[in-house]
Image (cartoon, rainbow, N blue to C red; front, side):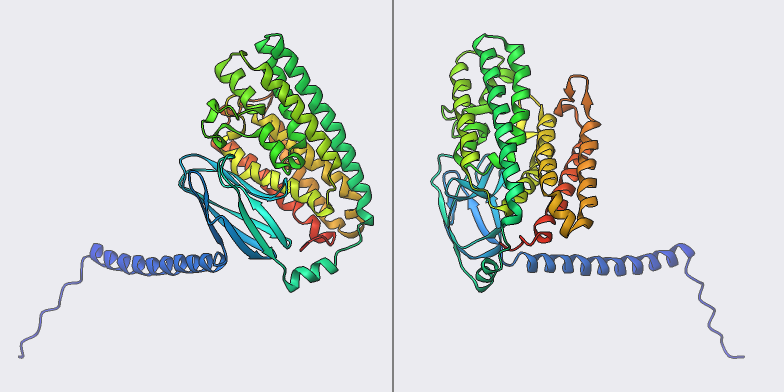
Length: 399
């Protein structure tokens, strides 16, 4: 009888599972690698036209840029040792900006630019400004020719001017009352009136932030000055906030509050003198809400000493609600399907803020956890996205 090869024992069950598991892991890893590679490739493709700008301690590189008219993306890299902002300015008016870019990090600014020359800020307010040249294209020429009639927008723009006038008066009155409390040496009253004045400013903020020089005098944070809180150029609301809530000392503050009265009075005058194009009516509010979502709702950086950020967010919502109200008649005729989305986004943001109210106003922002801050940011971002659909619906996109 021929010799038979003894049967080989089957591999242990654990070994079989281990081999099968290894195969599965290898397949999954390959799939993940392909997915990650695809995402990275898509990201590189999407960002291939980004203009890279580095902000150093005392300048930005490059400080002379040229882009074609239309949509451009700028990646701003902060190579300085403090949080900075980068702005595109048309004269004294802010076209686009990105605030509070943290040291070592970058942010992307997307801008729809018309032909012309613009100034760009480069970190510290004392730094020299750069220049952005925007060259015309066939598309920009065609968009100018296709611009819709402005007659329909006369009513909403006129009513918005009335809104700015009323809110400007309320801001001047609130800042004057704050100044009187400071003059009287009443710290607790000044702290209470500071919150009232800040809420009044935030109802004007979307329009006010277009006026670069005055907004810097009124609203700039300490990081944007060479010596931070100790810098003589650091004035306005946040200088007063620092004294009231951090130092808890009114010494020498009267001169700062009196200058603030002068600056907010000048702001009201400039807002009323400005000719606001209809496409900016929505875009200023969208930019304000996106800044809230991307920066302020996360870090609470706007009111770092007093932590009254939530009342400011409510003021921003009031401005957004007003724009929806003004444009509702036009949207009812040409884009009625957009109104439920807008109303839902306004109500969602409003409900989120109302849930954080306390007896004497809003909860202190340093008591709000990361999850709640994320929810606030999400509601602000959803409202900005809904508002962003208005201009295309009214024929104002691409201008």
